[in-house]
Amino acid sequence: MLGYVLVGNDIESELYVRMKKKACDKIGIEYIGHSLDKSVSQEQLSHYVQELQNNQRINGILVQLPLPDHINENQILDIISPLKDVDGICPYNIGLALKKRVPYYTSCTPLGVLKLIQSVCPDLKGKRVTVCGRSNIVGLPLSLLLNKQDATVSICHSLTPNIQDYIKNADIVVTAVGDPKFFKGEWFKEGAIAIDVGINQIQGKNMNGEIVKRIVGDIDFDNAIERCSYITPVPGGVGPMTIAMLMNNIVESWERMNF
Image 1 (cartoon, rainbow, N blue to C red):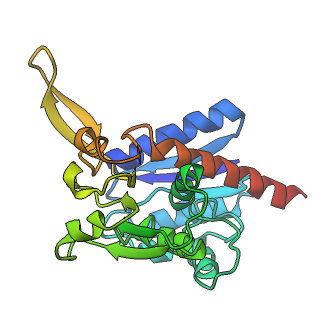
Image 2 (tube, rainbow, N blue to C red; image 1 turned 90 degrees about the vertical axis):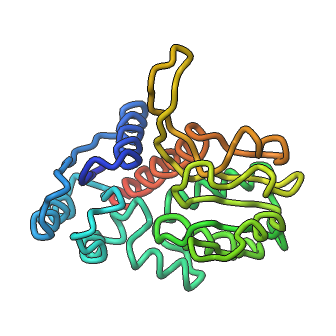
């Protein structure tokens, strides 16, 4: 059984939680959890997570990130046992990955991204990979996974000058910055592999001239697709892989607890 906590109404977080519930329903995994207002206190949130941790029926715990600014994220994640950390983002599991040891669980989105890349480029040895974004959820754990595959990894972020130069020289580009269509199609070198982790909500007009909201990635997909050999769409690219990796981790957690 999966225990989850969702705080606030972040569009990306709500989307992922809905997708995770749908996947659990599809393959028969039970779940219980809490959807909390963004004003929830540190003490209240800690209580809810501890409640899930103490529940013997729960094999895995998912605290959907990011959390509101007034919440100490590290203190919340510290409550979760490494054996129930099916999202692979708690300090112990991240630390094992950093030490090049095998964690109980690998972070779902980075692992999904790696699987996507390896599906079209099995051997990453010496490949130049630019990871745009240095979050604890995607950028940093992904760089560890890629480094373990002997790729040459560059990490870029909002303060990186001339970021397009890193893109132009990369065989593989992963974007996770949360800036709609920031990465221009002409930045990518011919034949590059592009993995778009960004989820951004923008407004536009439909064919009837009505204002509608839609989800786009960090990459200007329509132009980048002309230069890239492979590119993931948003939505429908990395998201389903993240869900698949989470389902895999939940099944592994059940096996650990029962066998």
